[in-house]
Image: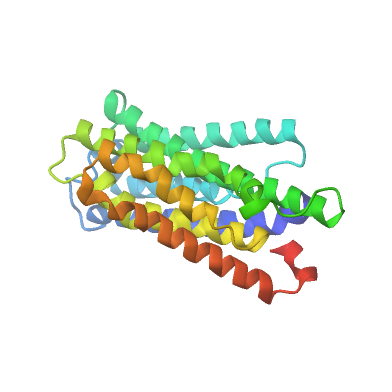
Length: 276
């Protein structure tokens, strides 16, 4: 863990900078002297003045950015400490998001507040689960190098199995949650389930996890296949047959990421894979 000091500093700094950029995007009307956005920020402006409100928002978003940047780093070397540190990190993240919703956007209670916290918790679970799978696969790889594990299973199903919870979360839980949020919001356009999910979340998440799997285990054709099969029920449960292309929006990037990870694995000498 001592070797992670420098990455922690770098990630916190980068996250804080991204948080400040987010402040500039959300609070652009403040810099222009506007009075209508974001909703609820007038309370903070009246309490702190315009410069104070901008500075307070910048601090809150920078803190959240720095905290979020640590989400993909290990918090401990043993299981019990990992759970405790992860829980503490989650609690800090919830507190920061709650402060931003309360002070910057005027969301103090009610369904809207709960929905945003729920979305944050779901995103946190996706990131944490993806990182945990990476740790698990690294342990399996070390055991293989030490001769403590058998060779690859047929179609590498055992190597792919630890990724199944992530696939279920991405392809089954997330579509249901986002579709429910769109219905609650009564939006004319289902932005979350109709645009953000198929065109951004599914391809990005499928590709990144496939890349990680390919670097550690090589070609695992069951991974993109599982993505396709697990998402297929959502096509008819949440959407209709016209959304069948969603299955390809996750399966094709998953296959591409897996193949790219496999190519990277073959290109990098075995001695250098431990640092990847």
